[in-house]
Length: 169
Image 1: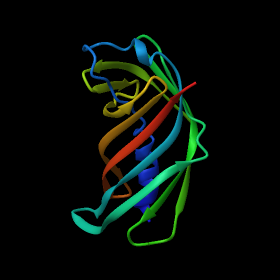
Image 2 (image 1 turned 60 degrees about the horizontal axis):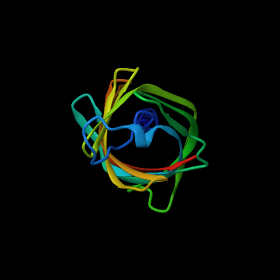
Image 3 (image 1 turned 30 degrees about the horizontal axis):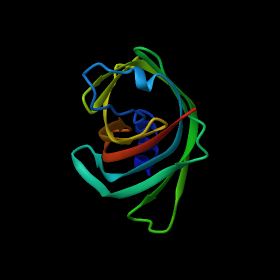
């Protein structure tokens, strides 16, 4: 079962945040530290070996035991910590798989344009998220993603939506 393992690596890049409806470039209200208090994800996957489709299906899950903290500076962002990623696949109803994401660090720059927040991670990945809701102390963000992971002569394609809630420290 290569595709669950590949999803763990791919979800390491999912952690992104959303923007606001203020003027483009307005970031001061996000500056500070934020605890990630929830992360939920759902979507579909397709697993290929060469050009042959081996498997496809649905998945959903949530993070547990979250220790991740996001720190927003004027134009820099850093997230550190971890969580246990739990996942249930359509082919195993009622069975929950757990994948640890430990000692993760994501660093880069960020900008706001309307209701979008864009991250340019030092890894070269660019992620864009939408704000679902926000208060002075809480951000709820949505990140649609398509991840492609290759290895062992195969490729896994995950199409998902991740919803993350951050609380100001």
